[in-house]
Image 1 (cartoon, rainbow, N blue to C red):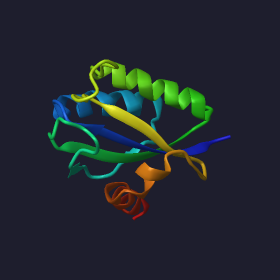
Image 2 (image 1 turned 120 degrees about the vertical axis):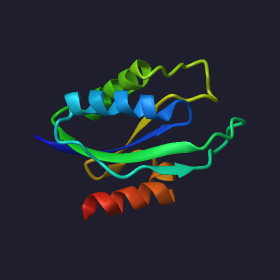
Image 3 (image 1 turned 30 degrees about the vertical axis):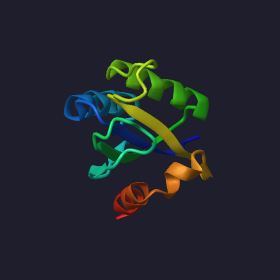
Image 4 (image 1 turned 135 degrees about the vertical axis):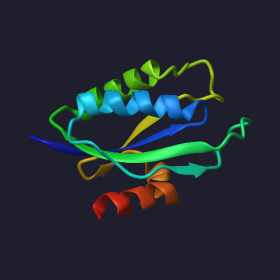
Length: 122
């Protein structure tokens, strides 16, 4: 059975390199993945005021949600994400929706997420 997933990728540190790695990794695991155009946003609750570059993506997978989340955390690590550094984020990838279940309500409502969802539906 295939599950529809919606993710958000974001970076405020060396985003071009991080996104290049993340896209390659995501495409290797999820060949059906489609990405929205990226959007710059101001950070939420961070001292580091570098803009975030965000991109929304959707794909289908037969994996359970927990395995998808583990893969996403592995990709963050491959991009250079450090658990200790909460200000300089090479790559943050969150599973926002799994099938019809919204997993991150606050993030899901943000305008850049909604813009990406709209774009991917077109």
